[in-house]
Length: 317
Image (tube, rainbow, N blue to C red; front, side):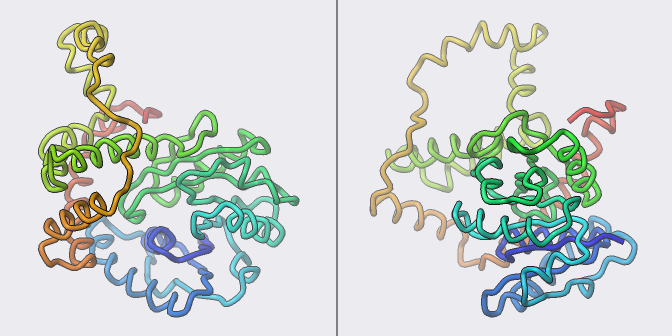
């Protein structure tokens, strides 16, 4: 029996809670916000049908969630601690220092930060700073398996090996980032696409719906299996990536993209918001969450049968 201690129960924290409960873990949560417990339990209830379809571990139950009113009490008995407080460096440093002082040295502390480097997060930790690492997931955490693991200056290979085992036990697919960098890997890729998407809307080239359609019906379908590099490897035909770079490499010098973000003017904000509300078509966020989850459950059932291990390529990402 394992216990996940979750500090901060926003969308990401609640996602960790739902995933751990579905994996058959006990969960202890701390969040001082009013109504935090009620929001979390409603979140888990909304996610549970999708988790049930994916397959629950023996003994999995929402009843194995317990809230506590003190952050020090939250780490008692923890096998893994996950911090999910708002993305403000000073706040994270303060909370992580508290967790580091309260938890036994051998218990890993993962931060869900989407951008901060682990060395900065470890700065105020004095007991065992090396076990404080980045463990960055993706929404919805209870369905998407990727977690980026990043160690700081005080982190040892043993810490990261422990982290890989801990997160695999939660059904995650850990990706160890070779060196710390702001935004890690996936968020930097998504940020580049996001900036270009904003330019396309700002310049009147496309609506938000049309930009999304380009991903949904085109590149996104390939990316869900092969990612960027292997997709372009196939674009080179029999000669693969080398021919692709010879043929299309010169286009990298052309002004196709604008990676610097556009100014978020009131006009652009209104255009983006109105576009997204048109796409939502009156459906609530909760309803869209359930639709997304239904899709992901079916998609995961398909793509898992094409992942490397299904081909006998063990130990490959």
